[in-house]
Length: 350
Image 1 (cartoon, helix red, strand yellow):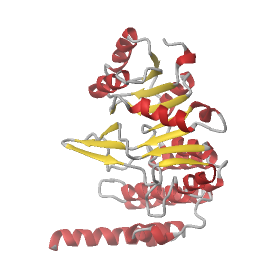
Image 2: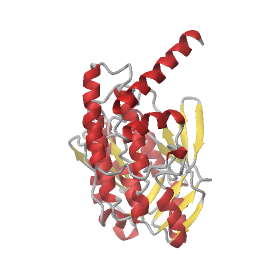
Image 3: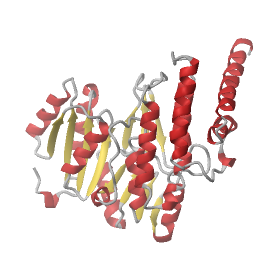
């Protein structure tokens, strides 16, 4: 292992059921043209060959640390990797993706050259036979001093529903390690949707300088068919409340950042509402209504529904979310079924 004083970057990969892709991911990190890093592989109790692959690579490359743990979820796996990190900056990437050889040299140069707390780049979305470059909505450049006000106010919401100023993903960023250990409470392990946002936005809230480079797309985000499901997750609303409560706690230090939470909260809520009332949900109608009422009560209790500017909302989202915010749940449900009925009519007669 390289002496810790020589490590500028700790790269953490949470590993779980990514056996077909893990070797490509690890190799892409080890082939970086930037030498001063450590790679921390956190095996989150993966039931396949992933643990063995991690150990095999650690045995032949002293830049690698391996942590084996019982399955706790990606939130805990990442946090345990962060606790083991010794670099000045931390990168958290996914085990089914891969990176270009110049990714970290370029990002560290931006960080060091600008004394930045956080560096953000673009990425490439990889589907079968299709690659699309993606960027952040906020412009490239160095943000510090008064310019950080733009970051704080627009990171979570740019004014068009739902478009964040900064992509919530962790894997297209490097973050100063010290930010993780001051006024940050790790999220609950129950979180599945929004686990990146639960870290990214609190880190931005504490940053004093941020660099965005939208012209650089070194990260390859693999879209795996079947990885997302439209079926209803029984714990979705419990996870949503845990996510939003965690964000509210961690964004409390930055009022400008916290103001965007109401829009992110509606975005998460809309995802849950749409799956709750989807045709794939086998629950009886009265069960769905009761689940919605329970979630709505918890959501309203968080106090993140005041002062919403509806101008940037599309008409369908607004027709659903305004009644949700105003406690007109039956109107919201009627509108949901009205939209579905119209869509079905167009399918039949269109």
